[in-house]
Length: 476
Image (cartoon, rainbow, N blue to C red; front, side, top):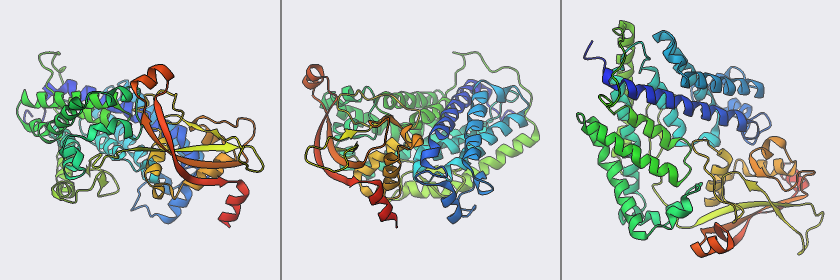
């Protein structure tokens, strides 16, 4: 069936599927290590409470049949094991139907987590991983050549990711149109990386070139994905290069990694790499499954396309609870100044002007001005990201801010494991407060003389000093 398969993309499928399995493994690992404090039975946003008010049809999940923290742990760690096995080639060592079943199992397990994740999972890259993961089912394994229709579905997904992001920028903040957004973005992005300070201090004309190149990569280059070779390969390589640029300039979980993995499926590697090994003709049931999948993608693309064409384009939206075909976009607006919430506690029984407050340190978000930002992506620190949103507006933290304070006042071990440093290792604090600061990257002189990465200025109080007794009265 020459019309159905494209053996010259065998290497692209291999890279995409193995890489996507690694991302799955990291996503499940983050779920396993962070869920108790965030979503567990005694977490900040407990899953049982969510399940009690949300029907299955709105959030399909295995947990509707049964939930316990042990059950969640089994799902998350099973996902880790299964994803690692697929990353090492398990799906290529079994019959076609079994390889597809392994990919389907990964998708079901992660969908079950995302659909009960509430605010902690309200990120576009969750839908992207699920959509790419469902697509991987229909790319087959080493027993058949890659189906051409599934490869074009991958390009269609990549197109929506890139073109959607480009459109939301042009329709959003004017700094994208006057090429000045990167005067601020490297400093104000949700979680700067180890090189963000250096990117921020690049000459401003180079920042303008960066923005212009971004517009080309997101608004023009994606159309080349549907052109004949070698144009499609060139377009894919340009997207990969721009995504790697984003990887080294900040921490965006696995958004950039899944995007560049999708781009590998559009590259024809022959004759640079050896051609695909001999494979059998695809079975008719597989041809039918791929045709049905393609028809489903076309039908479900209507709402994402309408959203792309709308002047009121929404970012990162799913139009059905299975996250099969979604719309994407990022950073339609850019903040000009960085605000950070700094949590601190004290063991003093009574507060005075001389009370010493000791600060908590998060793993990824800025805190101590002397601490060099770290590289965390593609791993996802969910609490750190939500703290960035909360600093923009307290409304983002309305559902989980006080539960977080309660757990810190109790020295809850699951919550403390989400942090880099707790200043009260032996006994919980008596009072806890949150202050709001404005952060700016230090100047080169300050960095090399004072060894500080950030300068910060107090704005005011985010939460007043609170005690367990005060919060208990508030809950009553």
